[in-house]
Structure formats: C-alpha cells, structure tokens
Amino acid sequence: QKIRFIFLDLIGKVCVITGASSGIGQSLAKKISLKGATVVMAARRNSKLITIKEKIDNEGGRCIGIKTDITKKLECKQLIDETINLYGKIDILILGAGVSMWSPFEDITDISFFEDLMATNYSGAVHCIHAALPHLISSKGIIVSCSTAQALVGFTNHSGYAASKHALHGFLDTLDMELNGKVQFLEACLGWIRGTNMRSNAFGPSGTKMGETKRKHSSNSVDLDVCTDKIINAIMERKKTIYIPWKLSLIPYLDLFFGKFLRNKITKAVKSE
Image 1: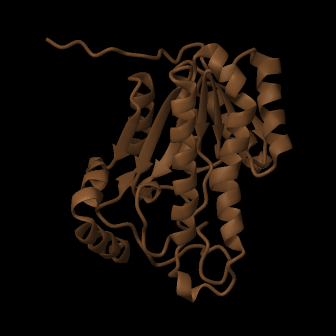
Image 2 (image 1 turned 180 degrees about the vertical axis):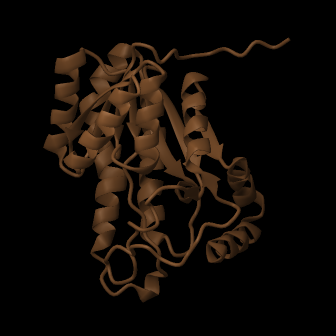
Image 3 (image 1 turned 30 degrees about the horizontal axis):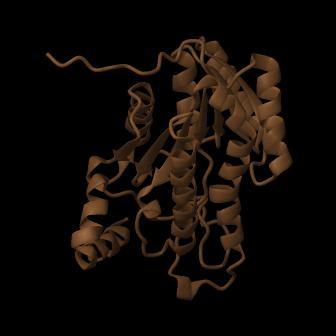
C-alpha cells in the first residue's frame, strides 16, 4: 500500500495571509488557525479583522490582525516586521488578496482601474514576498499563490485581470527557479468560487465596482469551503500546483494542441457565468 508523505504539520507554524478580511483569505485564516498555526491576517479593513479575530479566538484558534494596504511597500514591510517581532519567524505566506474585473476591453470608458488591478494582484504580492523572503528562506517556508486559470491563458471580459495574474505567475516561476528549493512554492489555480465577494468587487466598464449583480454562478463553480480545504491539503502535502476544479489542469495541454478550441470553450464558459 502506498503511503502518502505529509509535508507540513501546521501546529506551531506562523502563517501570514493577505486579503484575510473576506472570502478565501478569511476562510483559510480560520481553518489554518484551528489546525494549530498562528495566523497573521492582513487586510485594509481593520474593523473586519477585529471581528474575524474575535470569532477565531472564540473557536480556539490563535490569530492577530494587522491593518495593511499591500499596494504600499512600507506597509508590507511593517506587516512582516511586526510578525517577526511577535513570533520570530514566518513559515507560510499566503497571497490571498486580489481584485477582478468584468468587461470587454472595447466597452471600458475609464481604463485607470487597470493600475489598481496590477497594484493589488501583482505589485502587492511582490512587496510582501520581498519583505518576507529572508525569513521564509530561514524557515524553509512556503509561498502560496491564490492564482487563477486567467494566469495561464487569456479570458474574455478579464483582460486587465488576466494580465496582472500572468505577471504574478511569471514572477513566481522565475523566483522558484532562482531560489532552487530554498523556499517551497504552491500555485492554486482557481476557477469561479462561490461564497466570495470577488464578483461584486470586480471593476465594471465605467471603472467602478460592479456591486451585487443578477449574475449567478453556474454549476461549474466550486464552493468556498471545498476550495479552501483543497488548498490546505495541498500545503500539507507539499504540492507545487493544484487546480480547483480539476478540469483546469487540462488548460496547458489544450492550449498547446487545441488553442482555438480552448478559447471557444472559455468564451462560452464566461457567458454562462
């Protein structure tokens, strides 16, 4: 019988999570803390962090919240410095912060939000990694990217979002090569996830947040709890890449051999969402 090697016992680990005030980041913060890790939650909304901390404390988890705007390099350094001052190490850095969009490029009237997409999805991650990297090397830690299928191939109505995620994917792949095993990397390529505010917070063609819309997730979407359980299992099993749902794993192969077919499928899938 094949024995599965478990890489990481979360008990006693220190985990920093960006975008922890909602959605995937919040769910990961709660679950990881209840598995014995100390979680440092980073987000811009301090009142939200306080509320989440109270809930986690009441359930027996251990966490703190640090108000952080990851688009500001100094605040990312302060996040990491405070974590080290309190706990002396960082074992896991989860890049959970992200913002999306939903509009054909030709319909956009104010393109300035592309800068916001890049600042949050790419530069914010770079800021956090740059500050945390010496500590992650010291602990032989892991960097987890909450990525997306849009990091692998273009998606209709998501031009700026796909561009920012392509940038992060390329940065992390290069960093993985340079570090050559000093730090573990996990890329979680996600599809549409139910139970987050990603869609309501997405930028529309006018450059403002879309808010609540009539669009509902299709049967192709994945429940938030299922998604975060899979991410945590992948961390513990030292996986390098995980696809949620699994069929996203077909994208690299379809893109290589059946590119036109893949793009037609993507266009239809976006319309169904």
